[in-house]
Amino acid sequence: MSLVDRKDIRLAALVFLLLFYLPTLISCSKEAPVVKETYVMGTKASITIYGMSRTKALGAAGKALHELHRLETVMSTWDPGSEISKLNLSAGKKPFVLSPELSELIRISTLFSEKTGGAFDITARPIVRLWGFQDGARQLPSDKEISNTLDRVGYGKIKIDENRNSVTLPEGTQIDLAGVAKGYGVDRCVEILKNEGVESALVNLGGNIYAFGSPPGKTGWVVGIRNPTGDSEITGYIILKDEAVATSGNYENFIRRDDETIGHIINPLTGRPVSGNTLSVTVISPTAAASDALSTALFVLGPEKGLNILREIKGTGSEDYISETALRAGKSAGAQYAKAVFIVSDGSRIRFVKSRGLEGKVILE
Ligand code: ADP
Ligand code: MG
Image (cartoon, rainbow, N blue to C red):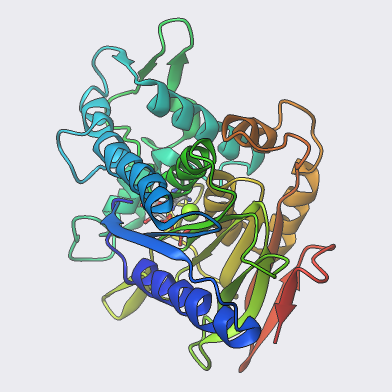
């Protein structure tokens, strides 16, 4: 959320295209959806609703989008007055008492960190900044700078006091929720829309999507998977119903420095931007927060480790973070799965590596 990135804008544009163009072409559906959009958390947000009067749908969507603007004032590291900025300023000083949502998001984030062996880590901010994301460093960092900065990174450094609802950060440690906050925001929107009586909607915040119910006459919502090579616009489709999807990749949000291309996802264990064959990874799961954080983590881990970790996560019981976030968002705790589609480069071609059980849900070209 703290980065205004081109990928988000393009993904948003892509989903827009698919939602309004493809479904009409395929089904010739007569009912037009109600759509409301805004620009928030550095990207475009849109809510598409079917099966409700225009006035009611616009009211419901308005409430949900308003919540995103409110969450931005809590979670944006760009805003010096936001709660997260104040928490970061408190590092090395006294415990910082958190609002309920920041407390929840930090707790969920550390669960994602534990489940992914630290591949997802909200304390990566100092190292993300060292590489020039957010405030544009001029040169590639040296090994020494990287190892010095890594001393300040690690989710274990976040000391949570459950009783006081406070967090203490050591000096120099900083939190960046960019890898999970958009997904969390989508889950909050879904909660609000359901409370307002909406039965069929798609929420898209910069490519972090949750869809529930289905458009009239359809079995689910059709969302495109972008071709990361740019050879064609789309390289597959997902049919979504009562679940979330997010895609992570370095192919659009990167900077060039000293002739090197640096992607915005950093491996918190090595302190270096992710390199390798993975071009993108798309994660389907019961909550948008989980899809958001896991897609970032799986991009770090790569297909082999990534898919193994997803298998381990499945069905780990009521403590499982997916069921926890699902419960929080008012969704079925039974839905404890997360599945992924990796797109990897294979010489001049691309190859898909995916979880089992996606037949009929994901159509790859
Ligand atoms: P993507 O959609 O490509 O996953 P996100 O916006 O969800 O991108 O997350 C990437 C952002 O999260 C980065 O811009 C950076 O601020 C932060 N980040 C980078 N690497 C990590 C990581 N390993 N764990 C958590 N956050 C990260
Ligand atoms: Mg993410």
